[in-house]
Length: 464
Image (cartoon, rainbow, N blue to C red):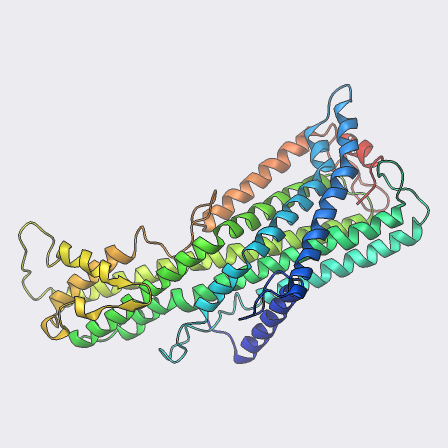
């Protein structure tokens, strides 16, 4: 299902806003521009804010962890998770921002490769975004706005009511209002940038899937689907072959330039969601519940962007292979009326030497036609079937389009199911760690009372 032209314009506008925001934060260079002093300054400000947030949270929470270690019965796992939640989040946020900044040139190169396909080739709509993924940039921007506005409103309110209260900061040198200012400017601002980074990465992956990866499939289905003319089929096969090799080349660039960044973003989102489990078991007040929801929304939208792009690439790659098998089956039925001519010691009509030579001459972005026999000498159905077999085992199978990520491999739906299973197991384990069931009592104001083990902790550490 293709998107409406107005929807495409809206999608383009959202992507442009997303790109501009990353440019003004200093994490994404402008197209065809060198790194300027102002750009480097903006990059340093964002990275510096993330580092200050990390230092602040480590200092704020280290005393709590020390106090727990001195308890008679020792600290429970759920208490440690609750105490270290912000340390985990600011640590992974700092790493994501640093890695994204260092990968900015690689991102620009991938973006140039994705925009380098001739737009006048093939009238079919392989350049259009699907309706399911067109809203992701908008959802990303909306999440960014909702997250930041909600934290601004709630923290400004807490500043007003806790103006003279001292925060749980070592030395008692900060009031609660001053602490809220530091957290809003450093931690909340840099965490909001995370979803923009993931949104841009997801946009690149989805664009790659909907354009280059899909192009070979469309050629096989539309241009080879109905024709029975061997000369036409041979020409179309060569076009699909060139397209497939070009796509594999771009995939290698993505894997080389963005493998570390994609892995870091996914690991950061998973750890951040896991760190929210302690808060789910111990809700405190309305403002903290609202902030918890925005945290979860931010991390979920960030991971959805990456997972959607990677899964879409995998699905398009598989559907391209299915389209090739359908073409092979149809041409095999056509050639069934002709008796096969077996070559000594080999597959029907397949020459291993010619296949190796073909792979050697078939490079990224070009195809040496002089290395192949002339079309006029290979216009029969049987020779076309041989080429299809060579195309199948040389450009598919181990040569996958989807990038292989460290610790994740090739991401598909099974990967998400496994991650969800880990979250369920973690929640059940932490739930069991509590002395009292979390849902055993509902307070008059409508909030579930927390378990004794966490309730005693949150009463002494009210910072958020």
